[in-house]
Amino acid sequence: MRAGEPLILWDWTFNHLGDIGGYALEHIWLTTIAVGVGFVLAAVMSLIIRQAPTLFGPVTWVAGVLYTIPSLALFAMLVPITGLSVLTAEIGLVSYTLSILVRNMVAGLRSVPPDVREAATGMGYSPWQMLWHIELPLALVVIIAGVRVAVVTTIGLVAVTMVIGEGGLGRLIRMGIDQFFSTPLIIGAVLSIVLAVVCDGALVLVQRLATPWTRPAV
Amino acid sequence: MTFLVEVVNWFLAPEHWAGSDGIPSRIGEHLWLSATITLVAVAIALPIGVICGHLNRGGFVSINVANFGRAIPSLALLALAFPLALSWRFPGAERPLGFGFWPTFLALVPLGIPPILTNSYVGVREVDRDVVEAARGMGLREQQVLRSVEIPIALPIILAGIRNSAVAIVATATLGALVAGGGLGRYLVDGLARQDYPRMFVGALLVALLAIAVEVAFSGLERVVVSAGVRGREAAEPQLGELPR
Image 1 (tube, one colour):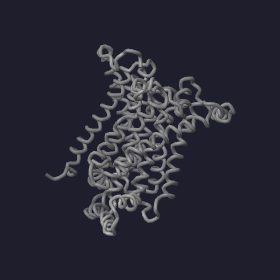
Image 2 (tube, rainbow over the protein chains, first blue to last red):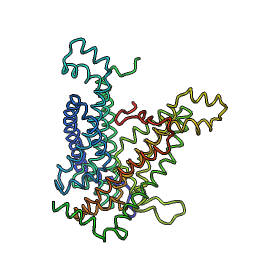
Image 3 (cartoon, helix red, strand yellow):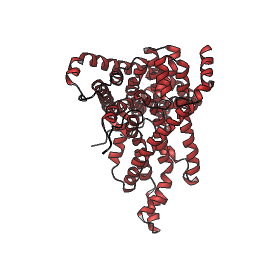
Image 4 (tube, each protein chain N blue to C red):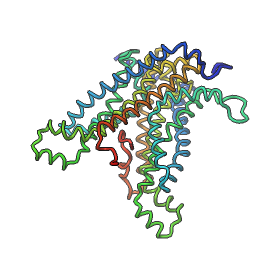
């Protein structure tokens, strides 16, 4: 990097705390929208697949192909259509969260043992009651695991949207690369790692609280 | 429509098929970079995973390394590798590692390790203990048990790990262009910078196709090297999202 300069200039950091905080908030905001919208769409699609199981194969195939496409390539392909905008970033991000979540939601609903369903039918549960009181609680572990992967993946991908002028903490990484300035580079990278690890840990806690029966017996 | 015509024209133009910025040389760079990184990741992760699985030790570490690896954004790793490659030098070398290849290499090897490590550990450990006992009873030495019983049976799972890792590496190697690396990412980054959208679109398409081709190539490889008796075991691979807790 710049000759004779330490890797992190602390006074630069303290002078720019406001900017750094703003980028972090933008990062969290972009992630929240992507996971939120992806979650709702995935929930709707899973319910449709629940009614029409033949759709499961094609949907997971499309989701799998989509997941294989590199993020930089997906964002780049969208630019000629939607320009350099938040919309482009969010379309890309939502596609990834959707492809992760729909697979997990369907897998979660399918993991409910047939015996349990049969018992519920025998007790007179209607299909919607069965979904709400039987299938959803039992699928919750797998669904939350999917949300974990989606959140952590999205936090990484939001940083990549720096190439199309968005990026949250990725903006600091871009500044570092463009100006050969290691301070914002390292701060952006470390904060996005911290954000991902903290969110991952928080979701593990949520999962433990929401599904107490999965905790090992003391 | 006009945009698609521009894309096709860009793709067919002879000048984009020659020289160091031509399509063949960019694909070559991309494959060379990805293959080197995948091989190094395999060389590090495979022996550790297989031996831990054989001894049934170190599972906690193997699985947690994988979980932690999944949580780390690849761009952040690349960003951290950038100053490292610019300042670190091999003992005795005059100049630091520098741009291009090295930052991408340093960032992507850690990214490639977790799937291989977890799958080779889980694959070997899950081999039916009765089969292993039978092999020992027939007088096979530990090394032979590992080489001719456990690894062939675990092969579908091990290969699935290497495939996941290779696909992720091909996809992420694109980001290397952000730190002056070569490969197909160049078309994306340069195309965006110059607002040359056909260039960018061709780049994006080629990377996506390359990632899918690698995935397909591994399925083919699996069909060739996996013994007919143990095919279809890849279902035991930890599915996406079902993280070992």
